[in-house]
Length: 316
Image (cartoon, rainbow, N blue to C red; front, side, top):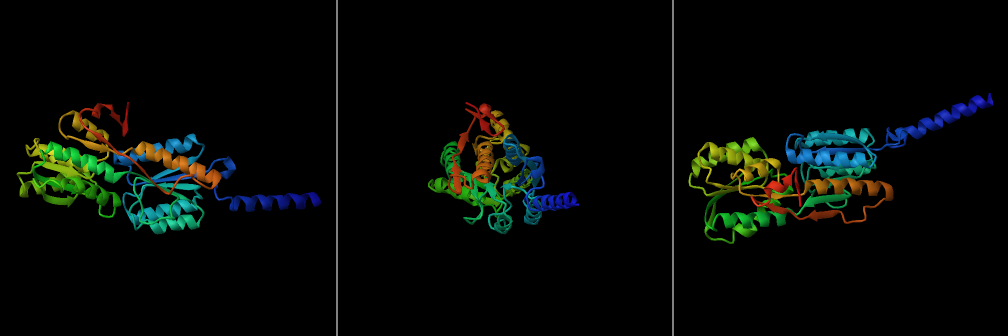
């Protein structure tokens, strides 16, 4: 009888331990890292998710990869799911600089740290890390090359990203810190295409009807630039200078074909690896050893080096 009581007590103890272990996978010796990205269609975000997944699994974690498709409500649901799954950490490319703060705080309150990649939030001390490309620096080198291609004169158009994304504003500010210095350059239209290729195409069609004499188009990302380039080619205006930002495979291909003229590589592979490695260190030691906000410089991609650009990595 005594032996039976001891067995029952041990069973209860094991059950309690399982309930409060924080991770249902703990019994298997693995913790879960949730990877929440903006899209599983856009090559940039796919690369972010794949890199984070591969890095986490190499470090011994299980992974759960999902997309919020830039929908805040979907993102909130995914955070709730990550909490319910007892994730050890969340790697995030967020759906809004302000709208995401509450979700990250909720995860933090549940004991789950968040590591932001690519997009910042408008708060400090909520996420553990915010690792982004130096978007302003990247925009300045992109704009400098664009101005050179334009001969520092002529009418141009700017296609901007999502208004809710801090990167859209930072890149635009970076562009204008250079372009506004040249009195011969005139921006005749500035419109969002929401980071989307189809919108880049349709917005460019509309702008071209109103401003048929444009000489250049500078875009906040490559998907919009590829869409704009396609619209220009369809209209017989392949002479218009088009530049982008991201360093996507589609942009590199377009540049090598002599269509787009340049893009700016933001090293998403490196950023994603950094986020997972910092999550691993934080989970093991309680600290990343580095500051919360971190930036990595961007690289100009032109016809001279586009052939060395493979899946967001510029080979030596």
